[in-house]
Amino acid sequence: MRAALLVLLTGLGPAGAAELRPPPGAAACAGCHAAGAAMGAIAGRPEDETAAALAAYRTGERPASVMTRIAKGFSDEESRAIATYWAQVRE
Amino acid sequence: MTHPTRRRLLAAGAALAFSRPALAQAKPKVVVIGGGFGGASAARDLHRGGIDVTLVEASPTYVSCPFSNEVIAGLQPMQAQRFGYEGLARAGIRVVHARAESIDADGRRVSLADGASLPYDRLVLSPGVDLRFDAIPGYDSGAAEVMPHAWKAGAQTELLARQLEAMPDGGTVVMAVPANPYRCPPGPYERASLIAHVLKTRKPGAKLIVLDAKDTFSKQKLFESAWRALYPDQLEYVPLAQGGAVTGVDPASMTVRTDFSEYKADVACIIPPQRAGAIAAIAGVADRSGWCPIDPVTFESRLVPGIHVIGDAAIAGAMPKSAFSANAQAHICAGAVIDLLAGRPPGTPKLINTCYSLVAPGYGISVAGVYHSAGEVLADVEGAGGTSPLDAPASLREQEALYAADWYRTITRQVFG
Ligand SMILES: Cc1cc2nc3c(=O)[nH]c(=O)nc-3n(C[C@H](O)[C@H](O)[C@H](O)COP(=O)(O)OP(=O)(O)OC[C@H]3O[C@@H](n4cnc5c(N)ncnc54)[C@H](O)[C@@H]3O)c2cc1C
Image (spheres, rainbow over the protein chains, first blue to last red):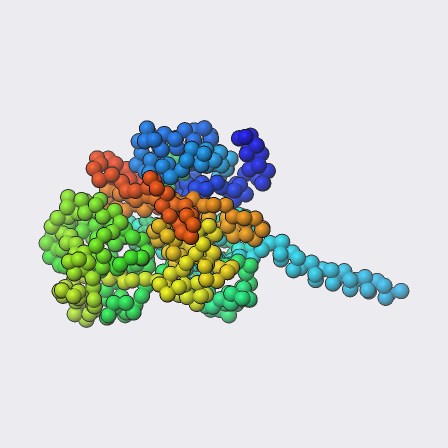
């Protein structure tokens, strides 16, 4: 299922934010998480790492200044799709 | 003998002529009006998505409002607010510096002040706000040269900074804050905090009176608790219920009036009510409120097809009018415009906003929200978002102040870099 999604995403063109279609919510992450930001870059981050971080922020298991409030806005499925997307984007 | 050759040439010419509109169709044209946080971001995404984009921006230099309160308080140089458009040009985007004057929505053309006219398949408007100089008796654009609003960054920001600097010890600053909706809901309270910081550290005996046309505001508990702790002798807040609504000003005598009192000010900062940038009304996309109703999935105007409105000018439901929102909306709108031009249905969006405010150097607070399209409007995702905790160690406030500065660096580099 995830492999199929990968093929679908990369099939749309060379890796870059505009050619891949960002899933709901993903576009807004970059406002804080660009390359060189103290908040950390999100593009190219391994999918499992992002998904695990979002899950831990959502439950509050991982304390944070703002990510706990943001992560609560996304379901497990949505978070996974966002993680998959950003793992493919190259800045 | 020459006849058939000539005919063939003519035929080839005709084919060439016919292929031109076909080529034009292959690369749809989008005009974006307004090169601020919304428009410049939309132009970038559209360009990357293979659209023929023209960005129309009246000013050769953008002056950012975020962090302009820090300039007023002497905590940030004005130079850090100015951004050129070379970065967008370098990315391959056509930037035209002219004011858009009129829009022919049926013929799908934008007319510019310099006489040029630009055709479009779809139009994106991100014109920001206009200040209403007809709303507070006595407060017109001339009065603003004496009692600055500083709600559009630039000369106004520098004027207010100079006035504060020059104010004598023991002076009185009066601020007027409008009712909702207006650009940057927590902005006036960040400004009040940082002005109070200036008074506390550099103007012994001086006072700030904040006259508010409403009773509740963004991050109110956090601001009020910080004010009690940091500025008990400097800042007096007067809500609507206690007569905070300003009913008139007189710049000659530096007087600010409410229904109950008259305040004599040494420095007066009057933030008037606002409406969508004038081009929105000219295009017919603003309703009687002065703002623009939009579809929450595509940001297409509910009043005029083919025109999309993002940023401060749009009625975006639960989303506040912020640079963060304008940028997030630009991404969604550009994606939807690309989809619509390709004949694909646009996806259902989810957006994020976060507004940081400084209440003192090294003391940051934030409000965040996650939004989805719920039927006709953009609504809060229940259970998400909210403000920084009320009880928090100084280390968290310091961390958020750092993140605020980091966000500003990141977003401006992304939009203008
Ligand atoms: C004091 C203050 C502090 C703020 N702090 C923050 C903050 O910390 N975080 C945050 O997220 N937001 C903040 N904001 C809000 C933020 O500035 C706005 O929400 C944001 O600028 C909106 O972007 P926009 O693209 O809608 O409009 P703008 O950024 O205002 O851009 C509009 C552009 O359109 C151009 N334009 C308008 N009409 C025409 C025309 N007819 N032809 C050609 N060009 C035209 C203008 O010249 C302008 O450059 C603050 C605002 C203020 C006043």
